[in-house]
Image 1 (cartoon, helix red, strand yellow):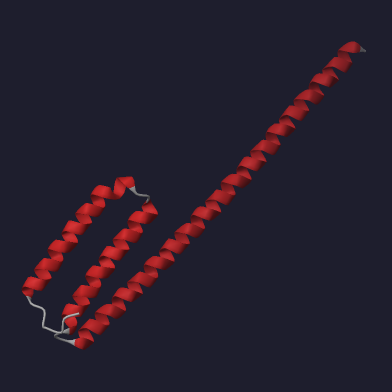
Image 2 (cartoon, rainbow, N blue to C red):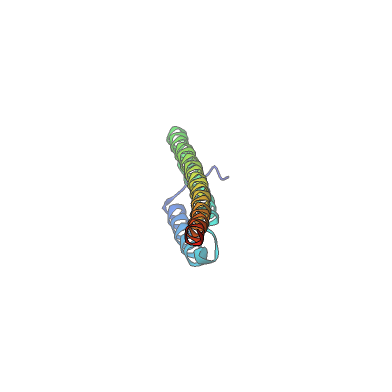
Length: 127
């Protein structure tokens, strides 16, 4: 990383790079799964944030340190949200499986009761 002070040109170039990369990601998002898109976006913004923090550090280390701290806190929150979403999806899948099993058991019970009813009717008519 350069220790030279960052100028306006560096920020403009970083902004153009981020815009280009976001556009590329949006264009290729259809061919990727949601999880993969999120990981790619996180990587992209991590790289951009790291560079922006590096640029800020050449003028004020404390500002850059605070920016980094805020960025990592955001990333921790993002990871927690992803984990919560995974857990919720897993819970929904378990619930769907449970309901499917209950439905199957009910359908089996209905078939059993239909057979019993048919047998009872047959026995009643036969007597």
